Length: 311
Figure 1: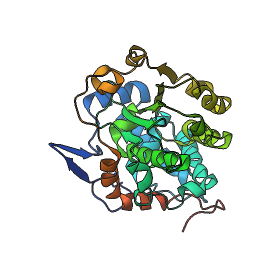
Figure 2: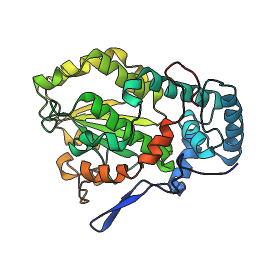
Figure 3: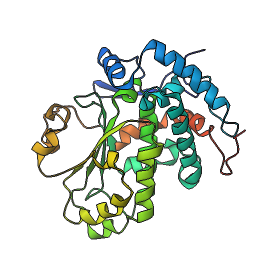
Figure 4: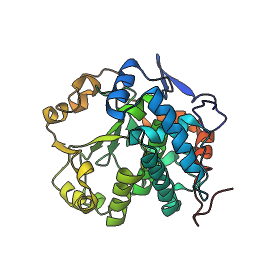
């Protein structure tokens, strides 16, 4: 079976030059550290992987109403890794992933970077170019004073998160180590809290708990004012124990944050020592814009709105 990473005809995800550095998604094979973690935490070995790929492919062939690229081993591995290479669990995750897209077709239909310039240019949603001390991707969402809620809706924020995590899913190292999310709520206002609804909260929690084929290892809430309790109260009823235990509230206590994230991987505004310049939303958008064809390929699979296989 041919090994290929991308779903489109792109040979590699593009890159952009930022000063002396190059910003790109990482499609390299697993590092030594990555292989160690994959073996220790995910049961990954050549023998288990080969057997799991065969079994998952056969299971998916039985799903007559679902169109997936089951001849793409690297795509199958994206779902096998978060399920510790249990084929039945990976099959169920794939079905939940696509059912969620059908349920929220208003968000997912035609979703690609070129249609979502607003969220990236608002510069409230960024991924650090570096990883944390455990190899995890770091996504930062700033929904306080930097968020102009009359110009950028929460649906746009959600779309931006989906676009970032779809890209992260492609990276072998991120498949193994996962990602952490930092919500910076500095300056959250009463008017902004009114933008949150129980429906939005349920969608986010359902997505994170059931429909993201990526290991979300921690959610850190920083700089939150007291009014944030009103927002979190909307999310709390939908949280199951596993995700609830991965949410940490730090306020302005940087030492509390550093208990989980090394200062070496954080910029100065989070009490860190990282000297690399922040990659802003415009720069990420420039990179993602070059990947439109890959997102079009991602959108070509799954169920249609009636649960019938796409043609």
